[in-house]
Length: 162
Image (cartoon, rainbow, N blue to C red):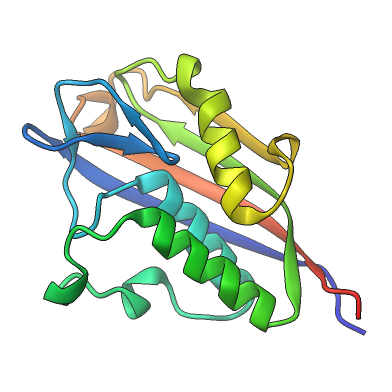
């Protein structure tokens, strides 16, 4: 019989001018956005890597390489949907996800419920099965200096019951 699996993922993206800030499916008003080959949703990237790692698959860079011009600007919801599909193909479903976002600014508290709803829809779970904590880095390193935003994610996968 299959057993539950745990996955971990993390990602960091540089903040720059001239890009939208999209975190956890939500576009957040801010003067800076995240640099990336996709829409650079660091939250969905960390979560996608957590899902893929739990089933022993390579990370999203393997499936969505940053030198592939055909996927430039891809919506990260498509990346997360791909990871969920791979989880199902492996005989699992998402039990829950726990996510931590580190950003000095903007304050994320007003957007967390909307993030939970958007992520839960893709994961096919209840918003109560998606935990999101937002913090700062107290002025330390690239995150603290407002040069980057970092996200980490842990997921629990449960075997599908036939």
